[in-house]
Length: 322
Image 1 (cartoon, rainbow, N blue to C red):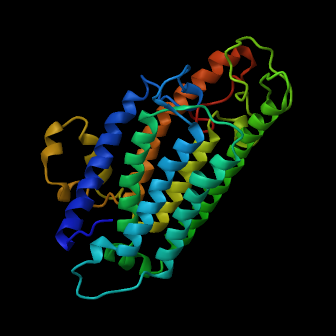
Image 2 (image 1 turned 120 degrees about the vertical axis):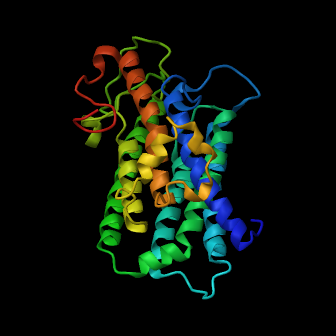
């Protein structure tokens, strides 16, 4: 990565922090209207704009850990500080947790997936942009003097948050494995019919159902359609809790939300934007804002495709709530 001066690093950090939040909050509502063209919403046919789903996923997801490693090792916000320091053990643990997630997301998971639908080029391009900003912000924050000072103190929230992160990460893996097993079973059937995870063949009410999509069962799928998303939210909530102080005792989140109602705030200096809304909390906020619409659209897709076969008691993404 190109080297920034101490002042330049602070300007870039605050600008990315501000615009990453604002743009995500603006895009989120739009995703209730349009479908991101990948996965079950992938476009059919042949086009130069349709890319191999597995390769494009790996490329766009690798950007985040690579950017994170670069900024974490270079510690942009530490430049110009009178005292140099080595990252604490807590900082290394959190860096390891971040990289563990992306090792699975960018390498292990796509390579273990039996098949992936093609992805429109707009998806990996948007993914590269998202992951560049997120990797930069997370690595920059976690290696910063502010993170060092916060994590150097013995914080009960660090251990609680790290435990929550581990639970969410494990839940994400478990529910993704249920989906992978559905695809494996579907791909192993010579007639190509979609199957439920119980092994029962779905009667083909709609012949356009791709062979690798079926009704998942087990664990939190009993209650919601997207437990993998829900567990990922739990994972990053735990991470934010471990890595950074709560932003909720200040107007930080309310200030960010107001950007949708007060366009003039957009033109204020980035340095004054939600000062306690740190990258770990921004990442969690952006995940919720951007994944919630897809979960809702995916839930409706399940209901429309499988009709009466789909469990009516299932909520979208939060058990017993929505």
